[in-house]
Length: 423
Image (cartoon, one colour):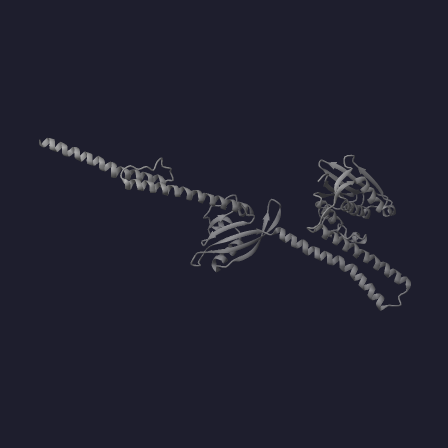
């Protein structure tokens, strides 16, 4: 009997233990497994947990937590992707350092500026950028907590030139106002510097070009005022000199106004189908007298496939006028000038060639600059303003084209204007 009672007791204990295991122990082991999977960023096969209501509620809560974690991860990834896209799109170099002068962020433009293939985040600034100017600027920003600016000149090994860079450092502060780092922007101002230099050179050149004829005119006017009894012969000579310089002033002002109109945003072209043979003959007729004075022969070479071009006829006439003017000035007597038009792929090449004094290799790359003269003394003597080829270049660019020059000292010069055959 006792053995029977003992057996019943064991069976009841076993049943109770199994029920307790299924209701309390096994569900919490499942929950522990779910937690480990969520922490390890694994996706559990199911969140269904056995046992009582409490364990089932915990499983449901874990499912909600996992879903929120996944959504938060997607949001963070999206923001990180957006941030990286913005950093890659930035033209300015960006560098972020902490208060210990360790790099925490750098974009592609910064690496490109300093020729750095890769940057280890957390690396000391001096190991990344060995520029005293950058180091001093950032250190001063961190010390004072104020924004700082400076400029840096970097050598560009690819173009064999120098690049001017403006550096702006701004402190990063926490809620307590303490400086925790600095954001540094590197802005390439090379083009701005070049534009400013062009502007200053232009003003200086205009002033110089105006000063000479104005000084001469003023000097002769003072002479006439001081000597009202000037002889007719001397008066005639003075007036001829004044007329020559007043014409030079007029030409200079006209060319300056033309260049200003071509460079303005409102510069427009009136396109039409231009017959090049008629255009060439029209320009030659205008210069017939001066060409005869130097006994210059003009040869027109017009390719059969380059008889018509879509362009602004007035501007094209101005181009040939300036090129023929230069060719005439620098040609020797009894020389030859060749006007040529030929199609080259989708482009038409207009060229004017002379066999005059030519241009040196040093001067050739700069002849399309405003006021640049290869032979300054001779150019002024011949009445040039130094703006003719600059006008030619701008007209070509307005048409979507470009200019080229080829020359050899003592053998002559060829100027080519290359324009789209059809727009």
